[in-house]
Image (cartoon, rainbow, N blue to C red; front, side, top):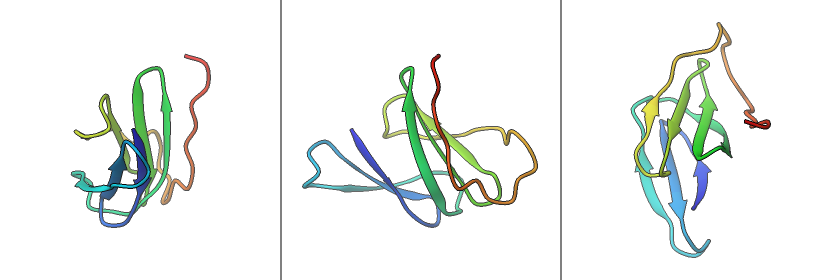
Length: 79
């Protein structure tokens, strides 16, 4: 699945890069970056918000790892 972050807690998903489905999350703020690793999709954005999903469709708000105003990037490393 391909995931494109957007604003206001929305993102778009696609299985073929041609047809996209708009999805919403429960954070309501812009999502700046996405990463995938170990079977989990993650997103980060405004106010240090983190979201995660096991299928790329249903999203859960995660705990903020620290007091950061904006998380402009996220990465997965080894397990």
